Amino acid sequence: MNNYSKLHLTGLNKKKFMITGCNGYIGGELVRQLETNLINYVGIDKNSTKNNSEHIFNLTEQKEVEQIITQNNPDYFIHTATHSALAYKNNFLDSFLEDSISLINILSILKKINNNTKLIYFSSSYVYSSNYKNTDLVNEKSIINPDHNFGIAKAFFEKMIIKEYENSTIFRLSSVFGKGNSLHPNAIKVMADEALNSDFVSIWGSGKRKMQYIYIEDVVKTIFASLEVCKGIYNLSSNDYVTVKQTADRIAKFFSAKVQILKNKTEGETLPPLDNSKLVESFNFNLISEFEESLDSYLNELKINE
Image 1 (cartoon, rainbow, N blue to C red):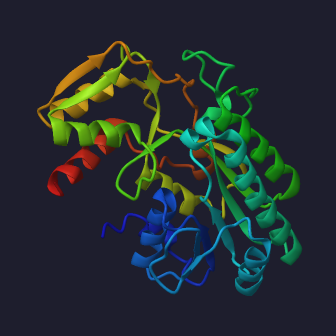
Image 2 (cartoon, rainbow, N blue to C red):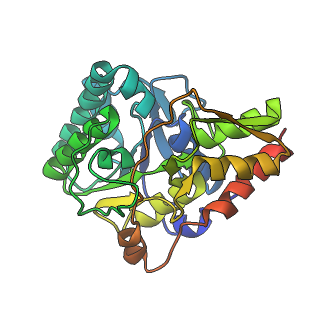
């Protein structure tokens, strides 16, 4: 196991962690790093769990949420258990209903017990949808008026958290990639799997859509490093802002595959580039790796495990 979080977990072995969505993509990777560093945690997931540190129930169940938070009184509550952008696109009302009830349960109980627990919440770069062009660099002070279902929900949840629970940190994530239990379509994983299994990589439309990515190891390191430092809202992304075709070309070259352009398919939405300087300034150092470097690291791992 790659113990890349050891430095950022130093001194936290006596702290109590609670992680929702502990068997999901980001939650699962957070758990693996805590386990590698012999740090105890309590996990919550509505799907099956793997050990006695993890509990199966839906966060909409208020009594269960209250019981587990009250019993454990965590120092850090990391909330990763939310629906995906695809789920919001396909079924906005049901996704919003479950996520909102879950968040209300968490906030009301954290407020009730002591307000000392630090809440970490994951928002999305989709809050910047509609307002900006791909030439606009957006920061945390930029006006948001999203038109994408996922962005609308995340913007609402951000305001709820900021208004109701001051001891919180919200990260607006760009597209996450890397190893782990990715439960929903992941742009880079889809292209890499296609290159491995079919010897080609498909691009929808012209491939001019631009995207900003963030390596999952960088996400995890940032979360742990931020626990005692950051409050408020922060963009979390790499500095690189590249077209889908540029990424596809690199993946295809790595696996000796060919790029296939499907002009009859509609490209996804281009979101504006995120400025993550607020986060960098908070740490006084940069935890975010260069995109090409982290992409090659991930592709190499896939190749080894093929």
